[in-house]
Image 1: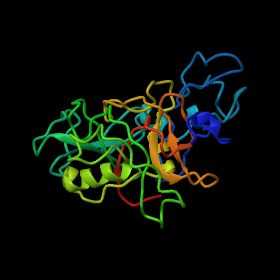
Image 2 (image 1 turned 90 degrees about the vertical axis):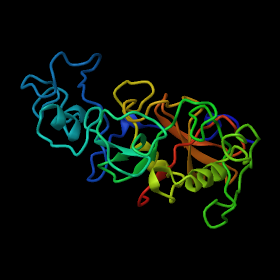
Image 3 (image 1 turned 30 degrees about the horizontal axis):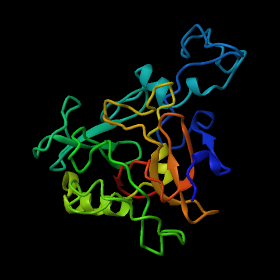
Image 4 (image 1 turned 45 degrees about the vertical axis):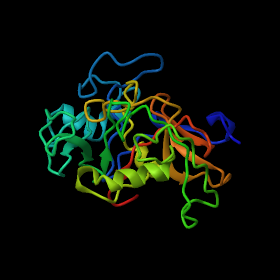
Length: 267
């Protein structure tokens, strides 16, 4: 059994690998740095050390949607921190204003759509008996031999029985329960890939490293399970951490991880 995320050989830090490709959000990193400290002027300033002719050129802080939004050069569909672009989605599937609040009524907020990736994400709730309670933790389980990488994982314990209609706390049971509830009028909710989870990282020093306006109640457990098996060890799966900013693998039988489901074309 693999219990520690550091027991596997591969881990990486997202802040060191910002993404600027089309269809992917920026990193949220909009501060430029010298050798020992942050720059004293904004990245948009002609005096910025990160300008192309500066002493520390070509830094992430000067490129992509983050500085473009700050400069008013980008029109977004919705809103969000830095260059991110999110829209709140209601229980009935309708797009909502940014001021909408979480709730169970048809026109209450329940999901968040990323207008850059096109993915729609489950939003966690604060009620301990809710199906989507932020504090529920799950083992990784899938009996689909075409996608589980050769390791089904663990069916988990009974701590989620009340919230999941008698089902145990595992990823497959949770996805099935959310689809049965037709969250935001959809029934195609699934486990996200590791890459998809990484698009939510807000690498600006926030903790948790996610936009809490659009993803409240983000529980900092050991990490968020992805649906991706760790290829070198089929009994392990990839997770993404939103406090330390890294991704690694861990034993599928570990109960310390949470889940945020997604829907939309996978990538």
